Length: 206
Image (tube, rainbow, N blue to C red; front, top):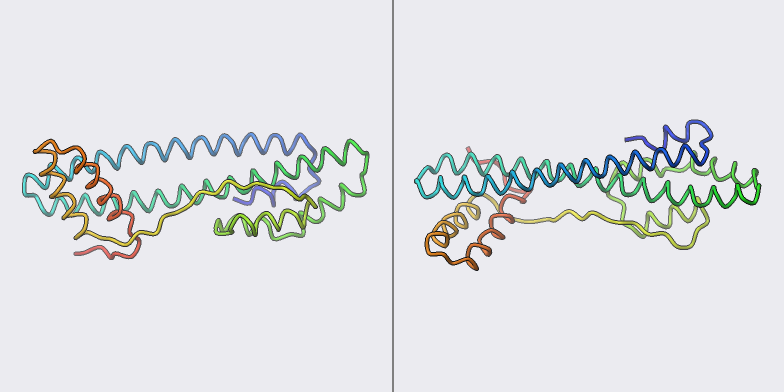
């Protein structure tokens, strides 16, 4: 993303930061909309899989499973992007607050030192990894900004073990529950299906 590297290639002012923050917020909204669409598509695939299972079309069930696994991969990319945007927003918001305080004091020397510390830091690389924990990121910002209280919103990724066999079994049970009208069992099987397609350890079966 390189948001901070580009921004701090020159000496930014408060307006530059505000413009960049608005861009980040727009990107966040777009990514969240993409996640909503992906969630809807996933539910459509579940319905297709149930119908295929009822019809005894096992190869189609397997194909749909593979499509849903790809949806989960896409979901992971979107969540990582949202994490990066969240970290960048936190960093820029904190920097802007500090910049405004120094400008109000007319402390140009401290402001220049702050910009240099940002430029010399590894914060962009840390954001790009999207793997830093909140405490570590907050400590990094404290070192740069000298602030005591910072908050980071974290998007967590789930680690789930499962695969096609679990997906197929849950799908069969869901089909039976739908026929019997057992809504509680349908909800339970939906959870099992979610676990199956979220697995990143299962290799696609040929």
